[in-house]
Image (cartoon, rainbow, N blue to C red):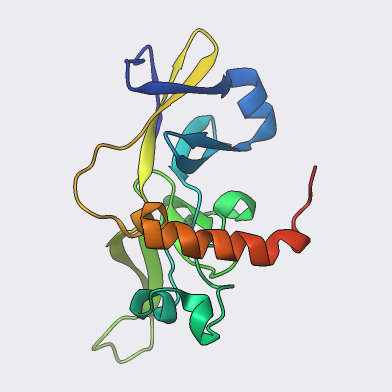
Length: 183
């Protein structure tokens, strides 16, 4: 979500000093048990759920994916290392694991497909709808705050904040731990 000056309320959570977040460009924070990524890009702050909404097919069907030798490596990739690109005039973060395109401002999933009923094969960007939960970012006197989204209804990235989703996410994090930098 875009930055709103002087819009800090009781539900807001301090996530850092503006100058530190601007310099870092990306920061991961845990707010009320929810891991989020704060991104500073083109003079605007954005906040989204950290884990990509993608779930393996096995994780959707099975109580615990690892019980059935299903690879967890595709579940809930972290967006912190994703590239940011302008796609169809929308700023998007690209999931480094799945290459899913997610708009920074709305959390909309985008995909490219052939335009139907055209003689010449042409491609167009289409929306999958809102897939990634976005959160409100505000600033006050050099401090940056995040207010968690109060949008009702289930959004696919919410899965990783359910009991089953946390188990899958922890398994993914544990299995990829040796690849991560401890700095």
